[in-house]
Image 1 (spheres, rainbow, N blue to C red):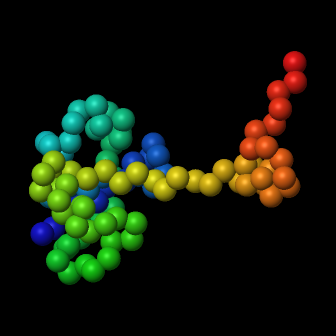
Image 2: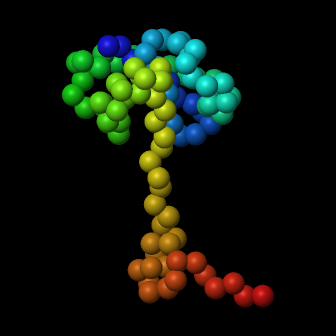
Length: 98
């Protein structure tokens, strides 16, 4: 099974996987509008890959077969300010003074 991977300029780390190059017919229009103009990153032969970075291979295959696409969201970034405040024994958010 081949899979085309596209990125967006709107959100770093967000990728759209479709079963064929330029095959966006199964992707809902609101998602395509939010994703923006897809930029081809690569075409992957899934049977030849054991791992796919941050994507669960079986989930990817299942979603491609069931929905016709897979959307990879960027990983959740750690809030370094919250981590610093907690390491200093402070509350996660500063007290508001009026």
